[in-house]
Image (cartoon, rainbow, N blue to C red; front, top):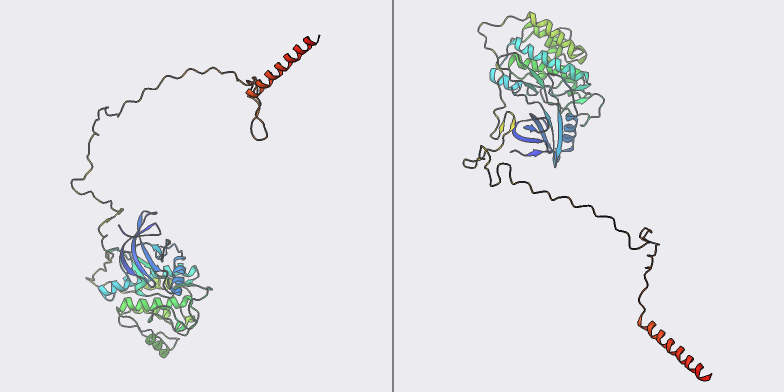
Length: 389
């Protein structure tokens, strides 16, 4: 059995590492299901701990957003749980297949923009859009299902920043130009990162943001530079607007970018003949020994120690046990006895002197002597009186 945190989450096995902590597969005893838990030691730097607390407080219910479900703390560790996403990340997918087909890329981008629409509606700027944070469900060769994850760098607009003003949060290579200039994070910065991710999906190479910005500036902001060889022209019109160096020239929202992307998909060339389908397979792995699909398995008794199966043995008293003890007959009621003392009904307690007995007490020895002396004295007086007469 694994270690149990907060009396509820049983650690099963490590399945990854997030931006601010390890990711474990855990068994949630309260919900009765497996979950992914991000675990952080409370002894880590206070800034990381504050980001961890801010991330676990995020609650966005959306099919393409991987948001925290519950959280707990135990001794020097804190954790929060989320759904287990078994298909790995987009970075794993590109590592397996290289450049992805244009229509498959558009399906992923549409889901990413759908997730950002919900995130931005909550006033949250993600600030770390990159392929490693785009997780995939294990759908096989079916349509992909993307989940936007890792909100460790995210912040709500208007919240105080946890870093210095000139410090840029996120992953190098996916920063918008205004982020590099130290401006306040805003939604257009996430859209710029979406454009860089799209290039990565279509080309299989990490894009050079600085070179792209220089290319746009040299061609002029009013015109769109020619598309790279791997990017269809219809799709490049959408990406070029996402990658505009000036945030004012980008799409006003993720929903607007998603509408433009939907309009560009019918203009894409048909799939090539014999094109290999992209398969998203399970990358989490099987459960370790001691754990099954329904949770931790009970230990099996060794051979020779099994509990006997069958009817219980019959003892000397029969199958129902010893016979019941005979119940003694009820005792006849005792007639009430009159009280020996007439004062029995008087109250007793503090302040109440117990009554004296009415029965005469036997005379003491000194009293008897006094009575005898008095009788002898009376007899002497009577004899004296008779002699005097």
